[in-house]
Amino acid sequence: MNFAALRYEELALNAFPVLHTEVYDGWILRFSEGKGYQGNCISPLYLSTKSYEDKINYCENKFEEKGLPCVFKMTPNVPSALDQQLAMRAYEQEDKTYIMECSLMEEPESYPASDRKKTETGTQESSISGKTEIRLSRKIDDNWLEAFVGMGCFRSMEGMNQNICPDTARAMLTAIRNPVYCAALYENGSQKSPGKIVGCGLGVVEDNKIGIYDIRVDSGFRQNGIGARICRAIMEEGRKEGACKAFLNVAASNYPALRLYQSLGFEEVYTCWYRVQNRGRGV
Image 1 (tube, rainbow, N blue to C red):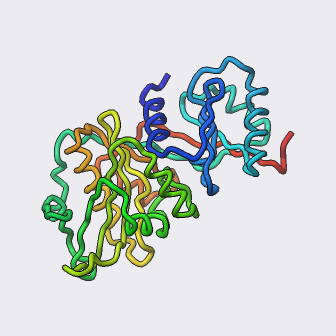
Image 2: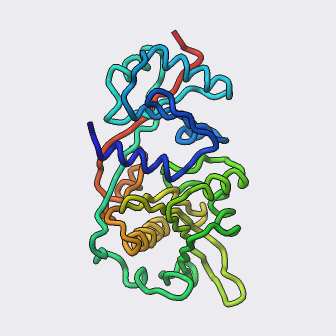
Image 3: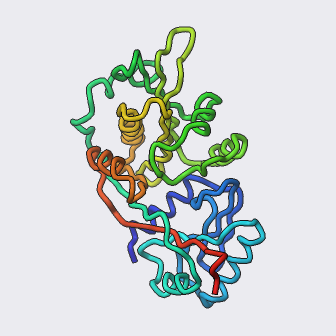
């Protein structure tokens, strides 16, 4: 049993409550609006007492009722026999992902001094095309939610599904019961206006760990280090909250993001992937 993988999977489930969850003989079935796998999948976390064939049939029927392909999230703790049976049923392997962590026991010396200066509203940042500022809030406001839902993902982090409506996103986010940090980087703010949000992200604290989810950057402001600065801000607030580790998920194919997180001190803990039903090739 990979206990680190089990715990991180549990934390990820808690961090993003979906609209409907069903527990079936040790498997967690999750359903939400949108098409993202994280919000619409089965997590085989615990031991089974029923046959895999019967359980897979049950899950396929449940997902068919909702017009969705049946998707399994696979981790090192999933028995190889289940993975092999899904492959025999034409389930394709997709979205290989690394779960990475880093220690927060000390404030990283690599943080730029500007990342550590605090004001009443947030962290002062170096300029993109003018004054920028990261603001961290313990609650969801309309400006942050609009940016969070409207921006494309900076990288493939697990969390909120893409193309999800704002009302559903708000419902899922406000259902989180652990401490959260909504981070937003504003450009060209003033005393009268906070300015435009060009990057945002979410941190969720539980069990002395902070998960970093959905770092998103406006398409016109990418390649400016905004994602790294938002990560640093969330990590620092997690450390102050008492977290001793930060963790995140990144697609194995996203090499720029992998290099970024390695530069921030993240190291791979385990790998996960999805088995996705190919309904046109079922056996």
